[in-house]
Image (tube, rainbow, N blue to C red; front, top):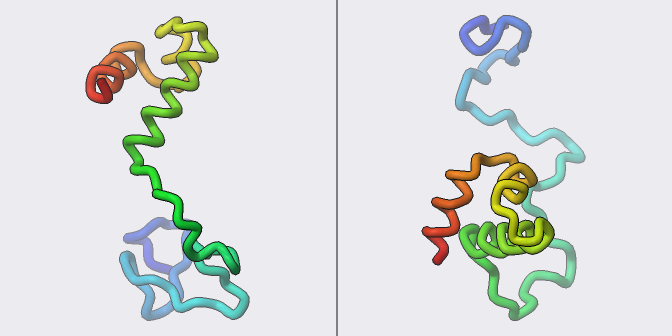
Length: 88
């Protein structure tokens, strides 16, 4: 056990902090692309575009009430205002 990482987590010999463990049989890749879905020809949205679209959706659901939208997003009203200003 390596107490430098956490006293309750056992680390196998040769695997310290920052070192990935070797894949185990049956492990699935983290970002697997389903068969036949390699290239759909659709543009991929950026994280900012996804966030902007989600904020617009939540504002719509809240009837434009920014305080309620901020609560639904679990962010402060001021953070919502900053994000809205950044997105334009």
